Length: 181
Image 1 (cartoon, rainbow, N blue to C red):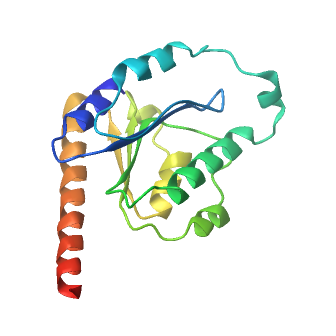
Image 2 (cartoon, helix red, strand yellow):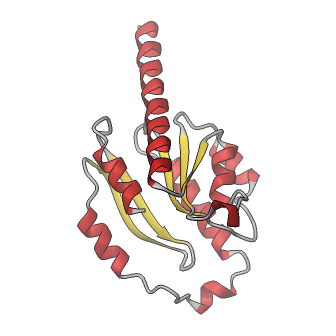
């Protein structure tokens, strides 16, 4: 995960970052950073050190589909409340296998997004879990791209393709803006 974030942070063509780190098992946002020129790795590290791995709140366990509700709310909030018009939305992390996916109705409510969506899922052994997860299904719904990262070359290939798509979209926006003027 750190390699993925460092790769993103080093990209000179990205001017601002918004970052949301969350823990699916605890159903909570661990860290949030909005529209900054660089990723604050020390603060992210401090937030991650506050995790109590292997500990789940009993109240959250009693919710039948609490993990799906948490992910649904998080995705809805991030996609609806995008300040300005982001160049892209990138999910990065291990697969999130849930009993129930984010509902299609909720995704339809979000509407069409004007930026590409990507999912870089870290999966050391993709053959052990080849199925699409809840985030992958959401990305597919919005016609985004999913990349499985198992080794460093996978990260390089995925990041090269992601930046290529973002740059093409930016150029298309500029050309459309120039044509309308």
